[in-house]
Length: 139
Image: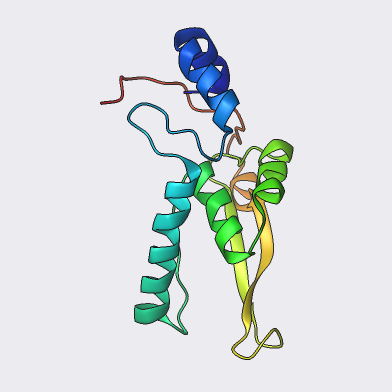
């Protein structure tokens, strides 16, 4: 649910989120960003182990995209929340990292592009940035 929807439909959760913060609040039936980050660190270890040296594509929603930025770029909580405030990840946009061999002993992933919609624009596809509407109950 959007922040506005939570405030309207679940004011007690909105108050709880305000108290704990976006990073640590666990919505009913959901997970806080810190848990997403924990799972993503495990994913990155698995990807490194089994697909090291190969190109990998991960398809995900906004929170996962932002949490991956947190993990890959070693961002602070405030830095990733500032990015979240600045840009709502556009539907079907992509984020790209490239290996920069000059960074560190084994190289480092460096952000090449973020929230890019060029393929959609080139195909004259309508680009949306509004959150998807809820069409069914989550269970």
